[in-house]
Structures are given as structure tokens and as C-alpha cells.
Length: 238
Image (cartoon, rainbow, N blue to C red):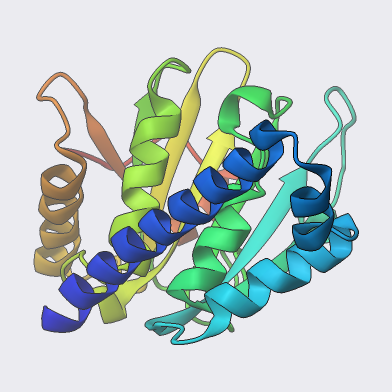
């Protein structure tokens, strides 16, 4: 919709503004003029405060507020509580807040296996049993580690930019870093609404420009609860 287009435009404007500030800072450093450098950088913290003030004016609100969660399980250790291992890191509700958070996250190639990053609408925990998730499911796409970071970033931009169809039905997205692959999943509220489920699949394919060679799999959360598995025994391929 128009709101989503405006949000994406704001993201693009914000990136350009960051680039301008970074170029100016590089020019100051490269000049070697210590008086100039001192006038701009009394301390690192002052520099960060100055940058925050320059970027804070005119923040662009997102349609939804989001939270970022992190899960790191110790390999080889059984009976670990998933709920105990999941940690909420930060939340954001503006374009600027999203980009500030995203730029400080480690890229998928640097994350240990197994690790999960969760981007969810605020108020929804990334748990199968959560009230917003318990009747839903997720679309699953498996990527090689060479390309996963690009598809993950494209998905997040579509998610926060409100570009995916039937956005109210979407709960969040997960990046699962595994030993020999990375898995991206998009969670929705209602697994029994076949039309909505297939519509979400088509929207994901379209916005990620997903090549035909990639297979998307769907699994309801109640099935995951029964077999205690996120990505095995999927019900639907498309």
C-alpha cells in the first residue's frame, strides 16, 4: 500500500543520510586537521550523541512495532528449555530505529550454529504456543550460506516496510543458522486459511524474487508441537 511505499522511501532516504554523515566524518579524519577533528569529536560518546540528534528529527513511524529476539542453544546438550534460551534484545517502531538495530546485528555468516534470530511484531513471542501463533504455521525456505544474508535482508525490508500481502496475518520472521545451511521462515496466524497461506507464499516469492529452483515448505505449529520439530515433516510444498 501507500504507507508501505512511503516507509521504503524513508528507509532509502535514511540510508542516504547515513552515507552523507559517514562521508563527512571520513573527510574530517582524512584531512588530518586536529583542530577540525577535535571540534567534531571531543569523545566518541559526544560524536554518537551528535549523530543521534542529527538523525532523530523527523523519524518515520512503522505501521507495526517490532521486537528482535535471539536464541542460542548449546550443541550436544539435551533437554534445553527453548523458552529459557530465547532472549529479547531490542524493539523498534520507526524506520530509523530499525536501521540502527539492524546495522548493529552480526551478519548470518558470523553467527555460530545453531542460532536463531527472530523479528516479530511487538507483543508476539516467537513460540509455537503464543496466542498469536498457536493456530498458525510458517513458510520455510532453505538457503546456502552464500546467499542467505541477502534474502534475509530483503525479507526484513519487506516486513517492516509493510510490503507483504495480508500483513495483519503475519506474526514475524526467523533466521535459523545451521551447520550446512541457513533457514528462513515466515510465521502467520491462521494455518487453516488455505487461501491466505498460499497468498503469503506468493507474496514472499514475489518480493524476494525467489528463483524457481527454490522450494517453499509449510508446516502448522500444532504439527511442530506434536513432533517437536521446526523444519522436519512439512505438510505442504509450493
